[in-house]
Length: 269
Length: 181
Image (cartoon, rainbow over all chains, first blue to last red; front, side, top):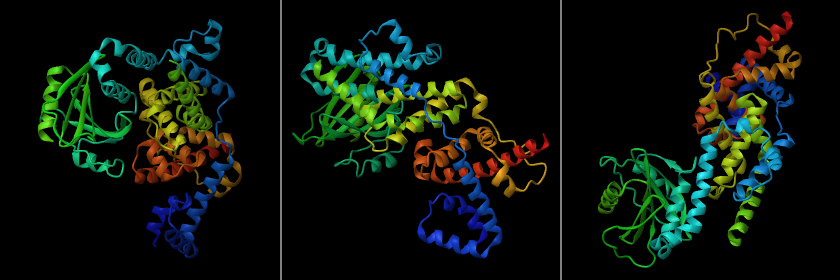
């Protein structure tokens, strides 16, 4: 170990992030190098100063009360607390109004979920016949929530495909359709029909397409051309099976472009 | 209806168990990123509501890292929206280089007090402040910091090194000012 390496590793050593062998090398070096020892001691005392200076900001109790109240309201959007109750749970509503986008999105999401759960089956017979289609739409909507879309962010099929290894008991085919105007945005794990599935996310302009896929336990045949299953809440849903794999595609993209997309995807797999 | 009400209640209970215990950590991070008490509290509440709506998708075991990631992103969005200057604060090496060669030993042993240190930490550029807070105050590992901030491990390491040397320099400057008063 020389002084240059020592400088590079001082902080990792200080933070106990080094393995035993490296740590011992550093200790040996410090015994023989006064310059590095001085630097190290300075860093060490700075660290302990930070630790002993009570810089930690604990959350006030009032914040916990606010959050608990917020959660109770989020749980039951139909509940209409009295005016007084609203005031106590949001004592600083003016500041809250700085986030109209988020509040509106949350409300819209709640409405959508409720609509799908309670009303959709009455409106759309196909959905009722195929509860999986409803699940597909719900998953799609959920994936549009912040930080929810992708677990692995990449437009490269050779990055996305290996990511699923060890996370699923099958290996989904990941197809690059960038040249056709549907670039890959990434992938994530999802849960559909009572089992973990692969979700692949494609993009068309500002529209996102979720493709869910998993092995077909019932048959290993092909279903033929993709079928448009249901248009629920403005989402188009396509379904097909191919080479023993089940596929569901869902998006707010228009029917024409989405059917192009599923055709391309099916022919490529 | 009843089934749904029950599972919602169950969801809230699980959420409160997995995420609410990390409220101090969430608040501490927001407070250091935002640097203003009231806005920081709003960020934390906002983050918890976001976390709750996304909780169905949370399958990990590290509730703390998860909520810290959400708090961090919420704070960054807020900072970006309202105060672009914050995002691009450059650490001015000129202003912050000590005029006299104060003895760092003396400084670190005695004269620096809590206020001085807090002020120095607040003056650090955002990403360096964030790295130090997560490491020294939250005790997160490099890996966890990398996950929370979405930065490569190597960057976490170099940020911490730079953050500490900046902090030291700010402390020396701060102490000098105190002494000149």
